[in-house]
Image (cartoon, rainbow, N blue to C red; front, side, top):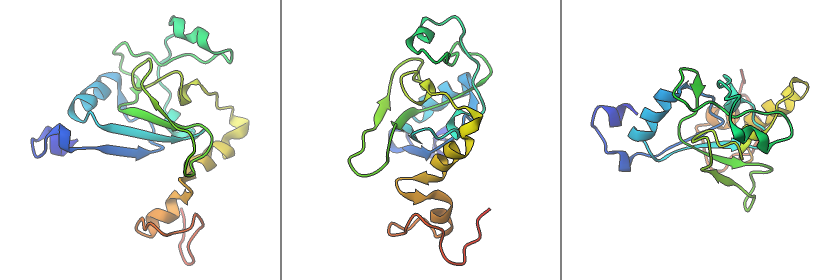
Length: 165
């Protein structure tokens, strides 16, 4: 974002892809980010809970809330100051192997598509399951992969001699 903001690169030359990213700014911030870097994608593995924290402000009056039977409510995209996602969600609702289904989430509200991972509930009784989904992306244990320098041919297990936080 800094490269674009300070004029070092044009928006069309920048692409941002994150994996399991939490909400990092407000609605207003997310709109500015989207203008500066329109090719930003947030990849989400099934029920990874981290992209849903911190919580967004809910729009309790939206008619879109009637789409689910689980009581979820959509994020309020009215320009408030609460946390809100930037960029397009790419959601893998079941697996992340070659050929698995994924969705480019372009519905409403923008960047918080209620037809994708925002439609799910995250009961605390399943917290460990949700965190496991955050730790594994495309068959890689993300922490191990990072410690090894992100090579293409590493297994999804902890490498020998690596200490994980």
